[in-house]
Image 1 (cartoon, rainbow, N blue to C red):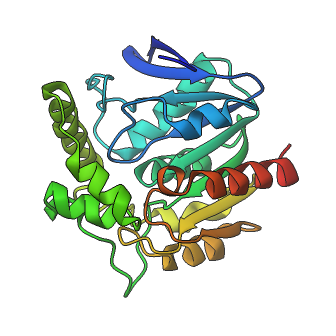
Image 2 (tube, helix red, strand yellow; image 1 turned 135 degrees about the vertical axis):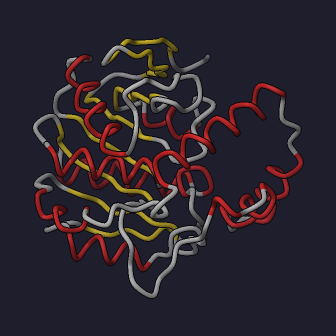
Length: 261
């Protein structure tokens, strides 16, 4: 695929599919519940200045389900081992939605390999009176309409005809997400107690019109992670890295250069 290499690496006895491109400091992108599926334009642009590493989480996409995976904690320990196995140090971790939750679970355990943390519409906690959307109960069309703000983008997404392989991958990702976040819905009731352990520069990036995880969660994370900063991406839903790529890139790279270069 143009702009990146695709490979399978073995960590903790399981094969993990990895897309990687660019040069510079390592930037590990942890994807959300929908998976990745491709080397996105945002990855290509980030690869101009960073060594961008985008794995399919164990049990998602092209990465098989390992026998040891039971919950989100297993995935967190896996990524600590993943960074060690690849010899990664000074890593800028960017986690989107479910990937943000995984990034948080990693960071409260150890930030030894981390240089910065960017949370993009992250799951992981619950804010009383601010319910998240129940993505497990949404039909595909309803979910798509709630992911984005841009109507043209919504209609383009809905008009796409998926291949049988893509349909199968959607099912795989949906099952994998349920395994990690079915009950309670996409949060760890104990995580908030340990977010004070995060001691690397942390940037909280949110779409200002996110209908999946409300922007109120950005303020909640700011209050729980010392020294963290919030950026709201205007006219964006739950996937600002796709819907508003340029403002997203400016926010993410600007923070890293200013706070964690």
